[in-house]
Image (cartoon, rainbow over all chains, first blue to last red; front, side, top):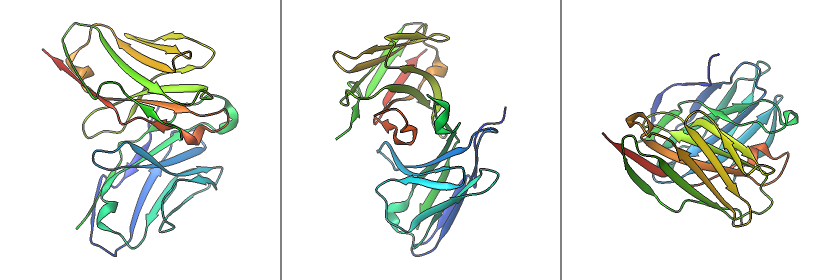
Length: 115
Length: 114
């Protein structure tokens, strides 16, 4: 079974630009989660999508947004990039929330560097 | 607020020894717990989970213990190998139906010496 895949692996941008990160969940998973892992910090919850809808978002500004497509893949968009946005962005997927206790399975992330 | 913490930020063990990684959680309403392993340059990898109605669960070379009385979680790794070197995170879910709301600790770095 293929795991969660993310692209690109690395992304270099400058301040003020926009970044788009992509995620394909494990087959059969309908929930996709985005996290930010900045250096020295734990995983900070960003967004949760399920069945194409944004279900919840963490404490991040509106310039962090995303969407989930009919095939359950997802995009994370970050506008007006700032230096502090430099981090590893992790995507995770799980079966739908109606499926009981379901661990989230992670991809290997996109390393976003802002110059 | 909710928090998950780790007693030891770093742990160094000899190859073949058993390792114990500890985690304290603060939300007594948490009903589901997960351990993840993150190797350098990779995303967190699911190791094992446990529901709050259990106090022990075993996997391959790993055992998770849950003590709800003192809100403590531990991960035991038997016969630790160099490939076990990684950062280990525990995560808690504050209540049923909130699978998105996993709270992660900052992690413990496990180093296995050959």
